[in-house]
Image (tube, rainbow, N blue to C red; front, side):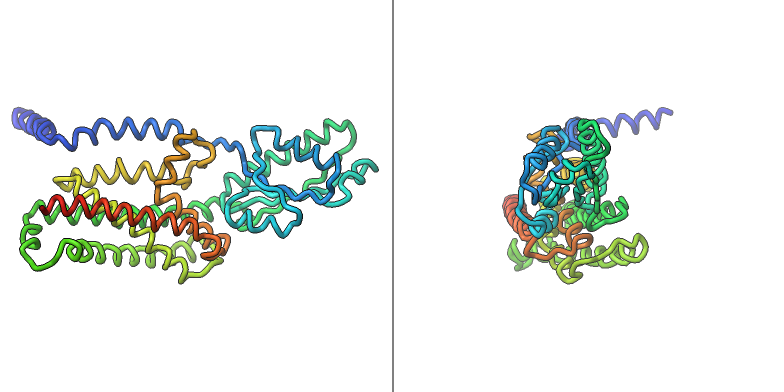
Length: 364
């Protein structure tokens, strides 16, 4: 027991001597608790709604107003034809699309149910299912308010994920998370290990320039990341039966800008850490878990407080999840996904530049 007590005291003293690990141990859990407390909600509010009103009557305007006056729907676009709804759903601008056909008011005045079509984006099964439920409830309320037999006939149709299988939108997100964890953690741990065992000093006496040294260190882990993706894809496609409606070549190509971010973060973590333990905790608690919370992978971004919604714009995983779900479930191409790709390229270059400056500073 005395030896055990001495060991416990030694470990506590070692933690006290390490000024970098203490903030990670005590501040990071508090930060995560704050983020999770606000962001971890499964309530769906303000579902993005696109409207195609082909009737242009008082009854059709009243129906749209009835839906959008609640806290459940937010009208984001109004188009003149049904062809204009598909691009909005593909780009993720709208989660639901409401079509009111011509003759809607005439049907209601004659006592016949007015047919209304609601298209739901099934690539996000939670928002799709809940949005359809809200729409059905609102339309039923409108019928009851009329005081006669059902005046509105709902014809729902779910796009991209007709059966609303949760695995179809969760598994691509898991694939993105695996890619992030592997590339970031491996890069950070490997570079810190070099410094711990003293081999980094041996590399510094070689004729390699700092930029060449960084590339030589990052490229192998990028290849490891690609191997991880290629290994996981058969499981996604043939075990979970997630449909791949887009281009496999495009999917693999769009992994590159995401890896610029994750490898850059791994390099940045290595410059902020003195030991492998520090690197692991810093990567996990400060860079990985907040990305998972704020990426929209689990919790809808539109339900978060405004300050956290703004914070999601600097989260690389947010954009890669959209890319994977778009390619897998919607079959969209670069013409639709270019905003996410551009955001990843900008973030990747910024992160790599900052990490390189930190790395050069340490070498100097």
